[in-house]
Image (tube, chains in turn red, brown):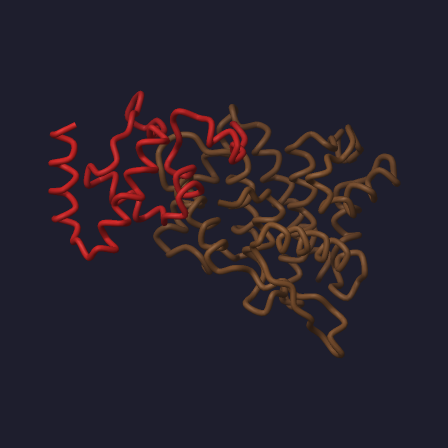
Length: 90
Length: 216
């Protein structure tokens, strides 16, 4: 069993766990889990039952983007559409 | 975005809205001392040989909030786990536990996670009012590890075990989640790959049994 990584280690890591995303962004676990289930946050998982790993930089940016869309009053279905279009054009 | 340690996170969760640990909750007072010992063990600053604790290396500067416990162990040479925890607990008016409470409390203020206030008759004691958002972050982090598939860190397992043994899980987790937390803790203890963390959880459990026996 490993130890919890320091913030410095997390900030220099390519991939992070959902727990580390909680620490990095201050976003609630339930929110991140919901975003993951909705497909808003792409992740990598070696096998079923193993830890999901998120690309740190892209995921933090995406969470900030979703937060800004929420602040602009966008609903979850609207956000889903915006992210879908964004992903298809990139 | 705080980098709190096991003892700091446990204390954040154990403090009430007035910044104190209830004097009626001896388990929580003892768990603060236990979290300090567990943190020193996990960071290999001290070691446990049989039932005796001893210093292994110097206390790093960034862990100076644990100096009351470290200094006590260093002074004693080899000392029982139970003796250390008893020294920093049992009566909250005791200056030893106040020293540890203030030491960790000040570190929380420095980290921007708590606010120092005066309490008690004539304001003779200190209280450390925890920042609600910071407490929520700690709980969200436990949720994110325990309720997800995959790896669990020693720090989170030890913190969850402390919260479980001091009956604080119900303050932060739903009945449904609590069941999952308990199930996960049991799995950790029974997995031979998790020897070290099982040791920490066992320390906590043994301590709580000692408390119950001592208090009756």
